[in-house]
Length: 284
Image (cartoon, rainbow, N blue to C red):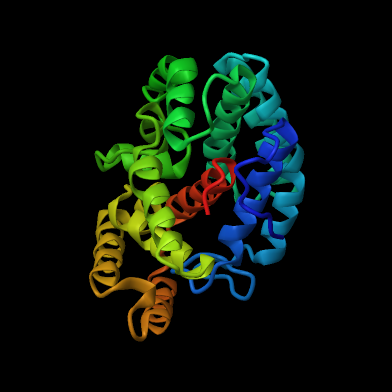
Protein backbone atom coordinates (compact mmCIF):
# COMPACT_ATOMS: atom_id res chain seq x y z
CA UNK A 1 0.00 0.00 0.00
CA UNK A 2 1.82 3.09 -1.21
CA UNK A 3 0.80 6.54 -2.32
CA UNK A 4 3.04 9.14 -3.93
CA UNK A 5 3.46 12.31 -1.94
CA UNK A 6 2.07 14.96 -4.27
CA UNK A 7 1.38 18.62 -3.64
CA UNK A 8 -1.11 18.68 -6.56
CA UNK A 9 -3.25 15.76 -5.37
CA UNK A 10 -7.00 16.56 -5.38
CA UNK A 11 -7.95 17.09 -1.75
CA UNK A 12 -11.30 15.37 -1.92
CA UNK A 13 -12.77 13.55 1.09
CA UNK A 14 -11.98 10.29 -0.70
CA UNK A 15 -8.30 11.24 -0.99
CA UNK A 16 -8.15 12.51 2.60
CA UNK A 17 -9.75 9.34 3.96
CA UNK A 18 -7.68 7.00 1.80
CA UNK A 19 -4.53 8.73 3.02
CA UNK A 20 -5.57 7.98 6.61
CA UNK A 21 -5.96 4.27 5.89
CA UNK A 22 -2.58 4.21 4.17
CA UNK A 23 -0.97 6.04 7.09
CA UNK A 24 -2.23 3.42 9.53
CA UNK A 25 -0.72 0.77 7.28
CA UNK A 26 2.57 2.71 7.26
CA UNK A 27 2.64 2.40 11.04
CA UNK A 28 1.69 -1.29 11.05
CA UNK A 29 4.34 -2.17 8.45
CA UNK A 30 7.19 -0.45 10.31
CA UNK A 31 9.62 -2.75 12.07
CA UNK A 32 11.29 -3.08 14.53
CA UNK A 33 8.85 -1.26 16.79
CA UNK A 34 9.08 -1.47 20.60
CA UNK A 35 6.18 -3.51 21.94
CA UNK A 36 3.89 -2.78 18.98
CA UNK A 37 2.28 -5.14 16.50
CA UNK A 38 4.01 -5.35 13.11
CA UNK A 39 3.40 -7.43 10.02
CA UNK A 40 5.73 -10.10 11.41
CA UNK A 41 5.20 -10.15 15.18
CA UNK A 42 2.72 -9.38 17.96
CA UNK A 43 4.98 -7.13 20.00
CA UNK A 44 3.86 -7.09 23.64
CA UNK A 45 0.32 -8.21 22.73
CA UNK A 46 -1.12 -11.69 23.08
CA UNK A 47 -4.61 -10.83 21.84
CA UNK A 48 -3.87 -9.28 18.44
CA UNK A 49 -1.64 -9.59 15.40
CA UNK A 50 -1.32 -8.09 11.93
CA UNK A 51 -4.46 -9.89 10.74
CA UNK A 52 -6.43 -8.20 13.53
CA UNK A 53 -5.12 -4.82 12.44
CA UNK A 54 -5.92 -5.45 8.79
CA UNK A 55 -9.49 -6.39 9.63
CA UNK A 56 -9.73 -3.18 11.61
CA UNK A 57 -8.30 -1.10 8.76
CA UNK A 58 -10.78 -2.59 6.34
CA UNK A 59 -13.66 -1.78 8.70
CA UNK A 60 -12.51 1.84 9.15
CA UNK A 61 -11.87 2.79 5.51
CA UNK A 62 -15.23 4.42 4.96
CA UNK A 63 -15.18 6.23 8.31
CA UNK A 64 -12.21 8.42 7.42
CA UNK A 65 -13.92 9.48 4.18
CA UNK A 66 -17.20 10.16 6.01
CA UNK A 67 -15.62 12.34 8.66
CA UNK A 68 -13.69 14.28 6.00
CA UNK A 69 -17.04 14.83 4.27
CA UNK A 70 -18.50 16.00 7.58
CA UNK A 71 -15.68 18.50 8.04
CA UNK A 72 -16.16 19.72 4.51
CA UNK A 73 -19.88 20.22 5.25
CA UNK A 74 -19.13 22.32 8.36
CA UNK A 75 -20.27 19.72 10.89
CA UNK A 76 -20.14 20.49 14.59
CA UNK A 77 -18.30 18.35 17.10
CA UNK A 78 -21.37 16.26 18.09
CA UNK A 79 -21.58 14.95 14.52
CA UNK A 80 -17.89 14.11 14.45
CA UNK A 81 -18.27 12.33 17.77
CA UNK A 82 -21.25 10.36 16.47
CA UNK A 83 -19.25 9.20 13.47
CA UNK A 84 -16.34 8.21 15.72
CA UNK A 85 -18.57 6.18 18.05
CA UNK A 86 -20.08 4.33 15.08
CA UNK A 87 -16.60 3.66 13.67
CA UNK A 88 -15.42 2.28 17.00
CA UNK A 89 -18.37 -0.12 17.03
CA UNK A 90 -17.43 -1.34 13.53
CA UNK A 91 -13.81 -1.76 14.61
CA UNK A 92 -14.77 -3.83 17.66
CA UNK A 93 -17.10 -5.95 15.54
CA UNK A 94 -14.34 -6.60 13.01
CA UNK A 95 -11.75 -7.44 15.68
CA UNK A 96 -14.08 -9.43 17.96
CA UNK A 97 -13.87 -6.84 20.71
CA UNK A 98 -10.16 -5.99 20.52
CA UNK A 99 -9.08 -2.35 20.58
CA UNK A 100 -6.71 -1.88 17.66
CA UNK A 101 -7.40 1.69 16.57
CA UNK A 102 -9.51 3.54 19.16
CA UNK A 103 -6.91 6.29 19.50
CA UNK A 104 -6.52 6.61 15.74
CA UNK A 105 -10.29 6.85 15.26
CA UNK A 106 -10.21 9.93 17.49
CA UNK A 107 -6.96 11.53 16.35
CA UNK A 108 -6.98 10.81 12.63
CA UNK A 109 -10.73 11.35 12.49
CA UNK A 110 -10.35 14.91 13.81
CA UNK A 111 -7.51 15.57 11.39
CA UNK A 112 -9.49 14.26 8.42
CA UNK A 113 -12.39 16.51 9.40
CA UNK A 114 -10.02 19.48 9.61
CA UNK A 115 -8.60 18.66 6.18
CA UNK A 116 -12.11 18.49 4.76
CA UNK A 117 -12.86 21.93 6.21
CA UNK A 118 -9.65 23.43 4.78
CA UNK A 119 -10.29 21.87 1.36
CA UNK A 120 -13.79 23.38 1.34
CA UNK A 121 -12.59 26.88 2.17
CA UNK A 122 -9.83 26.82 -0.47
CA UNK A 123 -8.45 30.01 1.08
CA UNK A 124 -5.15 28.46 2.20
CA UNK A 125 -2.70 25.86 1.02
CA UNK A 126 -2.85 22.64 3.01
CA UNK A 127 -0.01 22.92 5.52
CA UNK A 128 0.46 21.46 9.00
CA UNK A 129 -0.13 24.84 10.64
CA UNK A 130 -3.30 25.46 8.62
CA UNK A 131 -4.64 22.02 9.52
CA UNK A 132 -3.97 22.59 13.20
CA UNK A 133 -5.56 26.02 13.17
CA UNK A 134 -8.65 24.72 11.37
CA UNK A 135 -9.15 22.04 14.00
CA UNK A 136 -8.71 24.46 16.90
CA UNK A 137 -10.93 27.19 15.43
CA UNK A 138 -13.79 24.86 14.55
CA UNK A 139 -13.79 22.39 17.43
CA UNK A 140 -11.32 23.74 20.01
CA UNK A 141 -13.97 24.76 22.54
CA UNK A 142 -15.75 21.41 22.27
CA UNK A 143 -12.45 19.56 22.65
CA UNK A 144 -11.60 21.61 25.72
CA UNK A 145 -14.94 20.71 27.27
CA UNK A 146 -14.45 17.06 26.33
CA UNK A 147 -11.07 17.01 28.07
CA UNK A 148 -12.82 17.82 31.35
CA UNK A 149 -14.97 14.70 31.27
CA UNK A 150 -14.17 11.93 33.72
CA UNK A 151 -12.27 9.27 31.75
CA UNK A 152 -13.92 5.87 31.36
CA UNK A 153 -11.25 3.96 29.43
CA UNK A 154 -8.21 2.37 31.12
CA UNK A 155 -5.61 4.59 29.48
CA UNK A 156 -7.48 7.77 30.30
CA UNK A 157 -8.05 6.66 33.86
CA UNK A 158 -4.34 5.91 34.27
CA UNK A 159 -3.17 9.25 32.88
CA UNK A 160 -5.66 11.19 35.00
CA UNK A 161 -4.65 9.27 38.14
CA UNK A 162 -0.97 9.93 37.49
CA UNK A 163 -1.46 13.60 36.69
CA UNK A 164 -0.35 13.18 33.06
CA UNK A 165 -1.60 14.79 29.85
CA UNK A 166 -3.88 12.28 28.17
CA UNK A 167 -5.23 12.01 24.64
CA UNK A 168 -8.17 14.34 25.32
CA UNK A 169 -5.86 17.02 26.66
CA UNK A 170 -3.53 16.59 23.67
CA UNK A 171 -6.47 17.13 21.33
CA UNK A 172 -7.67 20.19 23.26
CA UNK A 173 -4.19 21.69 22.85
CA UNK A 174 -4.14 21.00 19.12
CA UNK A 175 -1.96 17.86 19.25
CA UNK A 176 1.31 19.62 20.14
CA UNK A 177 3.40 16.44 20.05
CA UNK A 178 2.17 15.69 16.54
CA UNK A 179 2.78 19.15 15.13
CA UNK A 180 5.86 20.19 17.11
CA UNK A 181 7.70 16.88 17.29
CA UNK A 182 6.41 14.15 14.97
CA UNK A 183 5.80 16.04 11.73
CA UNK A 184 9.04 18.11 11.88
CA UNK A 185 11.09 15.02 12.75
CA UNK A 186 9.64 13.00 9.90
CA UNK A 187 10.11 15.87 7.45
CA UNK A 188 13.73 16.39 8.51
CA UNK A 189 14.55 12.72 8.25
CA UNK A 190 13.20 12.45 4.72
CA UNK A 191 14.84 15.73 3.71
CA UNK A 192 18.27 14.47 4.76
CA UNK A 193 17.88 11.34 2.70
CA UNK A 194 16.71 8.73 5.19
CA UNK A 195 14.50 6.02 3.78
CA UNK A 196 10.82 6.23 4.79
CA UNK A 197 11.41 3.29 7.12
CA UNK A 198 14.28 4.92 9.00
CA UNK A 199 12.63 8.35 9.09
CA UNK A 200 9.48 6.81 10.56
CA UNK A 201 11.43 4.81 13.10
CA UNK A 202 13.26 7.92 14.31
CA UNK A 203 9.95 9.77 14.45
CA UNK A 204 8.43 7.05 16.61
CA UNK A 205 11.29 7.29 19.11
CA UNK A 206 11.14 11.10 19.20
CA UNK A 207 7.42 10.89 20.00
CA UNK A 208 7.96 8.21 22.64
CA UNK A 209 10.51 10.42 24.37
CA UNK A 210 8.05 13.27 25.00
CA UNK A 211 4.49 11.89 24.87
CA UNK A 212 2.55 11.02 28.01
CA UNK A 213 1.42 7.81 26.36
CA UNK A 214 -1.79 6.58 28.00
CA UNK A 215 -1.21 3.01 26.87
CA UNK A 216 2.21 2.94 28.53
CA UNK A 217 0.73 4.53 31.66
CA UNK A 218 -1.97 1.87 31.78
CA UNK A 219 0.30 -1.11 31.13
CA UNK A 220 3.41 -0.03 33.05
CA UNK A 221 2.36 2.75 35.39
CA UNK A 222 4.53 5.82 35.82
CA UNK A 223 7.64 3.64 36.09
CA UNK A 224 6.93 1.97 32.75
CA UNK A 225 6.20 5.28 31.05
CA UNK A 226 9.40 6.90 32.33
CA UNK A 227 11.42 3.83 31.35
CA UNK A 228 10.06 4.03 27.81
CA UNK A 229 10.70 7.76 27.58
CA UNK A 230 14.26 7.39 28.86
CA UNK A 231 15.06 4.52 26.51
CA UNK A 232 13.67 6.47 23.57
CA UNK A 233 15.71 9.55 24.42
CA UNK A 234 18.83 7.42 24.76
CA UNK A 235 18.23 5.94 21.32
CA UNK A 236 17.91 9.42 19.84
CA UNK A 237 21.02 10.66 21.65
CA UNK A 238 23.05 7.80 20.18
CA UNK A 239 22.13 8.83 16.64
CA UNK A 240 18.90 6.96 16.05
CA UNK A 241 18.29 4.59 13.18
CA UNK A 242 21.09 5.93 10.98
CA UNK A 243 23.79 5.34 13.60
CA UNK A 244 25.97 2.23 13.30
CA UNK A 245 23.89 -0.62 14.66
CA UNK A 246 20.82 1.61 14.86
CA UNK A 247 18.37 -1.03 13.67
CA UNK A 248 19.88 -3.66 15.93
CA UNK A 249 19.55 -1.29 18.88
CA UNK A 250 15.89 -0.73 18.03
CA UNK A 251 15.40 -4.50 17.94
CA UNK A 252 16.96 -4.84 21.38
CA UNK A 253 14.63 -2.17 22.73
CA UNK A 254 11.68 -3.93 21.10
CA UNK A 255 12.60 -7.16 22.87
CA UNK A 256 12.91 -5.31 26.19
CA UNK A 257 9.42 -3.86 25.77
CA UNK A 258 7.99 -7.30 25.09
CA UNK A 259 9.51 -8.60 28.32
CA UNK A 260 8.12 -5.61 30.23
CA UNK A 261 4.73 -5.85 28.44
CA UNK A 262 5.00 -2.22 27.32
CA UNK A 263 3.34 -0.96 24.16
CA UNK A 264 3.42 2.74 23.17
CA UNK A 265 0.08 2.79 21.38
CA UNK A 266 -0.29 6.56 21.66
CA UNK A 267 3.08 7.06 19.98
CA UNK A 268 2.02 4.67 17.22
CA UNK A 269 -1.14 6.71 16.58
CA UNK A 270 0.93 9.90 16.48
CA UNK A 271 3.36 8.37 13.99
CA UNK A 272 0.47 7.34 11.75
CA UNK A 273 -0.95 10.85 11.99
CA UNK A 274 2.43 12.31 10.97
CA UNK A 275 2.54 10.00 7.93
CA UNK A 276 -0.95 11.23 7.04
CA UNK A 277 0.05 14.89 7.38
CA UNK A 278 2.99 14.33 5.04
CA UNK A 279 0.69 12.86 2.38
CA UNK A 280 -1.99 15.51 2.78
CA UNK A 281 0.44 18.42 2.73
CA UNK A 282 2.41 17.08 -0.21
CA UNK A 283 5.75 16.90 1.60
CA UNK A 284 8.42 14.47 0.48
